Figure 1: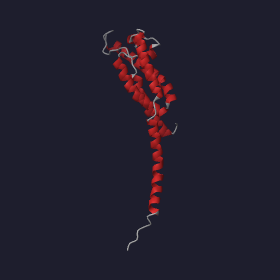
Figure 2 (figure 1 turned 180 degrees about the vertical axis):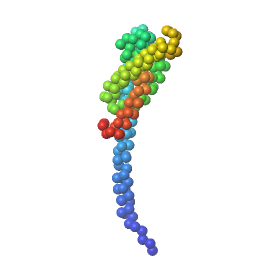
Figure 3 (figure 1 turned 45 degrees about the vertical axis):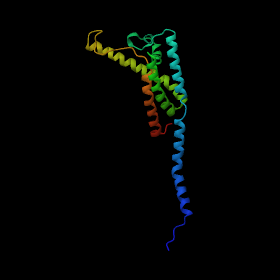
Figure 4 (figure 1 turned 120 degrees about the vertical axis):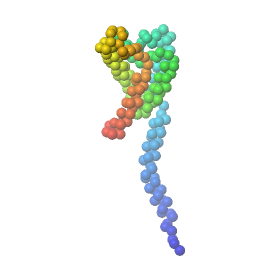
Length: 184
């Protein structure tokens, strides 16, 4: 007759081993799920501001062309207003759908308070980049074509797609730095 090993010690050893291996993974998973399910408060505040600004500006008779960003008609107030104004309801809706995803990702990475500070700063940075690129195209038009008839079309920019596109890149950069350099 072949005797089997003690069945009482084997399950206990396996249970202890399984618990030791999976406990850190479970706590990391729980923290990740908790972060993923958090309400993106700062993102929702910025969205509410943009929707309110859209309807208020139309109600006051401000057109997007009076708030758009262009080096041809530069005005300092347009550095901020151009990003928060939208040309149509569909334009606003599409930008807000994208911003909800991008802003929530940033907020999960850096937190609500940091998102409240970073979003306006990144908005200004992307607006200045937009202005610099438009000025470059104007300069290239002067070089490659007669005045007013260049090959690059320089328009007037409104909307939040520039900052919304930049937010997930910052969130990815932040996560990379936190994992690589333990600075968070």
